[in-house]
Structures are given as structure tokens and as C-alpha cells.
Length: 240
Image (cartoon, rainbow, N blue to C red):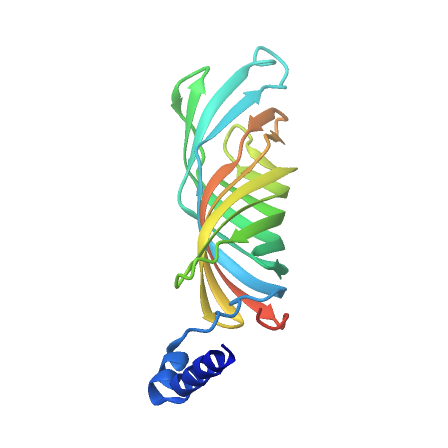
């Protein structure tokens, strides 16, 4: 049956050599190269920050009838901003990076709850934080125009409470543990530059400030953030 094998091979060769066969092979898609090969990257970031209403618990340290008195207030904030940068390494679908970010929020209002329910004095007050984070992010390569990703990070933050009024106020900075959850999309502008739009929930462990009295003010810090960033990727391995 050797002649049959030779005939079949000749038939295949004729089909491939024909114009129709050449067009069919040209239309066959090649496996797509990896859009973002492994390499180092760096980029700036900035966006919108919403500092969630903060509960302040103050334990009075003054002498006299107010000593040991506990006061509770709720502090609300106007929309703020964030700005910073990050640098890291992409390895397959994973990104590992170091990030520094500044978040700023102005106080919108202060409401005393106990021992007296009344508006507080908080004109010109603000709260801001500088964070240093280590993040891990995973990109889902789905063949879409944009690439979804999720991730998280841990690190430290220096949180400042700045509030002055007739009772004294606070101008203190504390260093605390910080963490964040990340979800967003990435759009490749070109093979070296990408645009990311992320939602980030950023929070810290409890913050304990010392006021000018000096009183101990136990507080918290948690935020919703929208972060837009540009990422420049250097070199890397050839596309797989």
C-alpha cells in the first residue's frame, strides 16, 4: 500500500501549494505572544480618597472633676485625594511591588456624642497618612481589551490628626500597621506602558493620639480609594 501513502502525500502538497491552501494557512491565527513579559516596572499614581467617618474616644488626663472623663465624638470628612508611586517586578500573571502613597482628607464636621450631644469645633481640621506598602497583584489574562486584576498589600502608615480649638486640640502623628485590598483593570497603551484603574480599601490598626491637654484620643482610620496609575515596564524576556 506504499503507493497509496505516496498519493495521499502528493494530494496534501498540491492543496497546500494551491492559492486556496495558501490563503487558508495565512488565515490561521498564530498563538498570541504574552502582552506583558516578566520585567521590572515603575510608575506614578493619584486619585480620590474617602475617609470613612471616624469615632474618637477621649480619656481625659486633666486634673480636677474632668479627670478620667471619657468623651466620644464622630468626625466626618470631605472628599480627599491620594498621590504616590510604585515600583516592582512582573512575573507571569503576578506583580510584586513596593508602594508609597499620601492620603489627605479635611474634616467636614465634628459631632460630640458623650458626655453631651452637640456639634464640636473642628474648623480647619485635617487628617492625613503616608503609607509604605508591599503589594501582590494577580492579572487575569482573558484576551479582553482590558485585563482585570485583584490583590492586596501590607505595610506601615504614619497617620496625622491635626485639630485645633478652644479646648486645645491635637497635632500628633502615630505609626501603625496598614493593609489594603485591591481590585481593578489594566489597559495596555503600548508594549511598555499600561494604564491601571483600581479600587482600593485601605485601613490601619487603631490610632492613639495625644492631644495638647494631654488627653489620650483613641481613633481609627479606614478609606475607600480610586487610584489611577501609569506603569512603565523595562525590557523583559522575549514574548512566550
